Length: 568
Image (cartoon, rainbow, N blue to C red; front, side, top):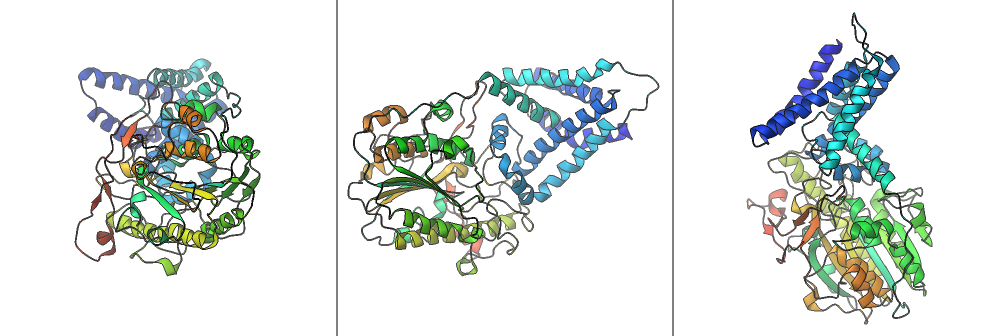
């Protein structure tokens, strides 16, 4: 039974990936080198299966099985191999593990069954007439160590096509090694000079999972919002669809809170002052309105050290998920009534999956939609029953997504503009990342955080709202926005000297300097890797309204933003 289970696992879990890996290699030497590495990895598993000590054998069996389950589940959800960058993103999102289980329940099943097969294939006692030496336990450990060393030399790359246990275990070893070699450095204190005393509220609203080209202020076919109509004394500066920092929540939120340029964001996030520290040094009150989590839970890699710099931390424990963005709008409007200048950061619920119940029936403008009624209490994730990744499921998903935008973006701004006094406020609105909402030649269930993302995952809205006559954006600057310009804008609004700010953090949104049109698909560029810059203009951005609603036979229209140079 032990050997049969092991053979079954190799046939179902290893052979398909090995065939795909060999098909992608060029040259006999590359194929032979891969086969040698694959054989060496199988030797490690066989040695683990025949360790004579029962306890050690079962411990290693559990480790190999869990690692295989982890890597295989990620591959099943994203439709792609688990990279080191993706592994680090997942480490930063461990608080969402329970939500992920509810979100992708069906995708967990096959990897779970195969991992159980591997567990018993390795753990069951071997029936042998001879005994193996005790040092057999060192063989699988040596195999893991050698593969880890290989990945280190290749900057985390090279595990594709190996048994799924090895990438996860080696990535964990690499991450632990990096943490030991590069311990956390003490954060710098704010040292930028102040040019003026702050005299306004500075607000950053970070929406969740918003495709900028799905909104009416960027696309005539987009979801209706009040931002295209008369706004009275409020001035809107729309930068259009711009590149995010990266296509995953953790990286974008971290970089928005700590700043940094395309060249130095890693160092800045590691040891630079946070936006909260700058606000406190400038004499502003700090407010964090978090509509995504409850009961004091932190996310997007926020720490207790950051939290200590926040004067007012607001969550909505007793408010239904459906109503939290409107509650955030009301609380934001109330905070703006304070005479004391403040920095306010808002994390919205937005349109993160599941989108089935993120809008009331009154906002079901787009039909047909996904099954409703089972996800009303889930902020970020939930079961995908009724969603199988087919073209028809994606059609319903996009319609549900548009309805969610109508409620959590359109109704949010309608409520905010009705209640808020923006006469001494500058509000910057964006999203953490965009969305991949199309089914093409591959079937993936995830809409962002993919290691090989489509350009729509990095395309987000960016605009400012203000009735403060001191806030002016040159028309020529409106085509040059990006996430990287938000931190320097916030600092200048707080009163910091513009030239000093630009020297450290780059140009602000008021600058007419050219801005690269790229987001970073490899935010966690470690071990000598370089960021992977992707232009959001390549291939255009599609918003197939007529096709999804069934109102006409026309094909999806490509909505390309103004072309900019995809500089690095």
